Image (cartoon, rainbow, N blue to C red):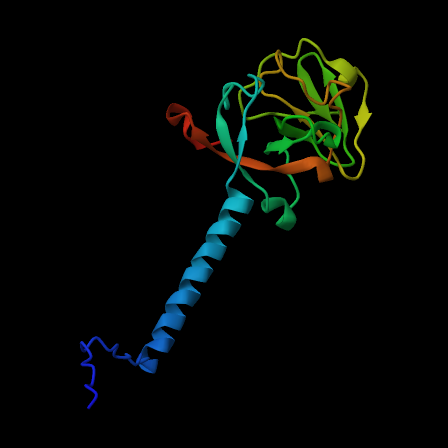
Length: 196
């Protein structure tokens, strides 16, 4: 008679996976909330939190060389840039250039002229409620400049040390070259706060 081999009893027991379908709506809600939060965070960072570094002291005392600012890219989809706004742009749309940060002084369709340290818009001297320096070099603004329907005239607040619309290399800034409005300084900590 043949002996039966005794098995050692290591047979694998198959486990049945039991899915509790009651939790599916709860899990679905959590996944939906996470996706929405990630989407909102992306939109916030992409449109309101784009970082740009300030190069030079042309916007002193509002911004200093090396300050890192946030740029609002969506604001000008809803409204037009206004006089006094601080903007980031690439001069003449040159993608290889760094972003320039300047203040809007002249709006589309206006005439701009600089006479004796003062800016004249459509023949009237404008009052600027922010600190600026004297304008020693008026550049191309010694004669009236008429802005096109999509052009802006920009100046740095530190006008003794600013390459802006007075220079032919920068000139008038077309709307399509404006990256967005500079609205907040994030670095260094001592300069942190809203720009204006």
